[in-house]
Image 1 (cartoon, rainbow, N blue to C red):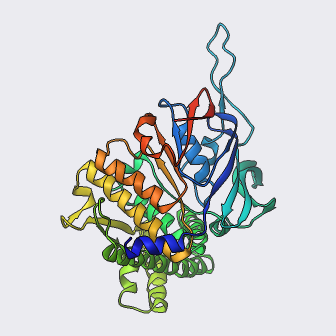
Image 2 (cartoon, rainbow, N blue to C red; image 1 turned 90 degrees about the vertical axis):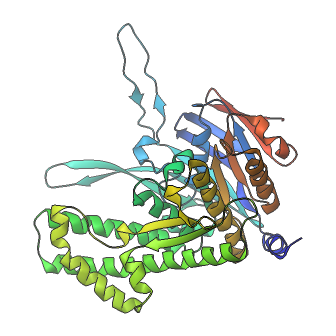
Image 3 (spheres, rainbow, N blue to C red; image 1 turned 135 degrees about the vertical axis):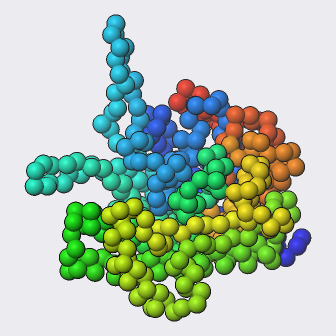
Length: 408
């Protein structure tokens, strides 16, 4: 056994994962309860039956908008209307969705619940209703989703991420920020607060306000938060690069990670306090830019760059299969790094991950999941691909908005 394997085995004594998952009016499920073990969970079924919805529900046990990045209103279960002689449109239930889970972390267990709470806001002209996500731990409402990181962390792969390296930079930033959450619980709160302040700042400017009494404090807070966000991203990139350099994977390609952003680059050569002053002045200078082209340079434009180390090639120029392998390599490195640094593993959510992997990579991935002793929720249309896990995993089959456990 090599040193890495031994260290992982010693550090991964704290098992973590979901032992019971309950969904109410979530996507296609009016009600669903799954009892699981802290082992790989294989969910199979035809396309469109709701396999991904289960993984998305688990992802809502972490901060943010879940595996799909969905709006809260899009998650509510859609109930078909009764069809008469005339066409009847689909009715959307007013009932909000909810997810609850019994979560284990070592010898401790916690009850995590998240749902949508309806609120209203009175303006001068009308009353507007809106929905917001609430979270409870052991029945107590928490003030910030960031606290979820104390109890549960997850990393995930979904098929839409196959285009991660070829589209805009925003999805890549979100992917990186989720990696940071596991090591810095305040990062989720900082990114949410920055986004809120940015929207408030932009709205004031677009409404014609040039009042420094309002704008300057916003810019000071944005600069302070922005530098903290950039510093956390840099720290996580450095941690993963160091880990990958010393412990490259034996099957999946070795990667090199970089940040391409103004504030992150300034932190390489200036004290944080000076970068804050620069950022604050930069925001003031760019007020006019926002009004004309909506581009403001800062941490909201940072790009997360990935390179195939062996080929010295940026990920966006690699083949589709190589890009998928690069993503898996990052997810495995993050998982191993978290086990060594945090003492417990994240839950892995892998949606159709084995599709289009060759036999060698598929077998290697499943073997690594077993060796890491993590709870991995994996979906597929073909259960036969998981024969190697028949003695180590729980198997479920989805059909008709229901899930039943099955023997291999």
